[in-house]
Amino acid sequence: MFVDNVKIYVKAGDGGNGAVAFHREKYVSHGGPDGGDGGHGGSIVFRIDEGTNTLLAFRYRHKFIAENGGNGKGGKLHGATAQNLFVMVPPGTLIRDAETGKIIHDMTEDDGADFVCCRGGRGGWGNRHFATPTRQIPMFAKSGTKGEEKELILELKMLADVGLIGYPSVGKSSILARISAAKPKIADYHFTTLSPNLGVV
Ligand SMILES: Nc1nc2c(ncn2[C@@H]2O[C@H](COP(=O)(O)OP(=O)(O)OP(=O)(O)O)[C@@H](O)[C@H]2O)c(=O)[nH]1
Ligand SMILES: [Mg+2]
Image (cartoon, rainbow, N blue to C red):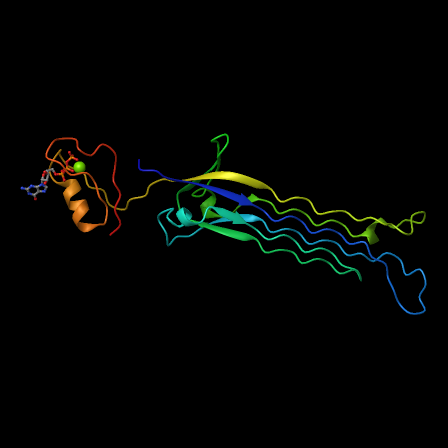
């Protein structure tokens, strides 16, 4: 089986930090804490793109980093929640952990549903959540949590739509070299080609 193989780095966005702020208004004393929460970071989501059949796009782009959530602000303003980053892969892609080599997900399973690979960090709470009757001036807020990050290996199963099979030296490599830009070794002895060559027509 011909296997196409690329290594990529993915990182989900960090959650935004909660804010430390206090309500200010004319004639209102002791307005109270009103620091908003941080927004959630974007997740890394794998999605099948039926229109492609190679991992060629990943030759030029190996890093996929989702945006971070916005920080909270005073006046109970919530930080913006970041968009998820969609990584488009051809059907039949296996996602492996680069360190252990274990298969994390097979993109052909589950009817090709989206796969959330790295979850974005959660936004931290602003200081208004930490006010209690005995702690009326909370001078702290929570920071957002980090987004998950991973090194992955993408592997593509079943790549070719058409295969050339034939006796040794019948000219399989010659045909492939003519009709596509592939450059298989062509020579007048048997078993010149030992592993499959791929061409795009
Ligand atoms: N006369 C003639 N020779 C050909 C033709 N096509 C290929 N050849 C020659 O046949 C030899 C083998 O060609 P390949 O394309 O390497 O054949 P292959 O089927 O890939 O062979 P293996 O990889 O060894 O299985 C080469 O020397 C080619 O130049 C043809 O149509 N006519
Ligand atoms: Mg050959």
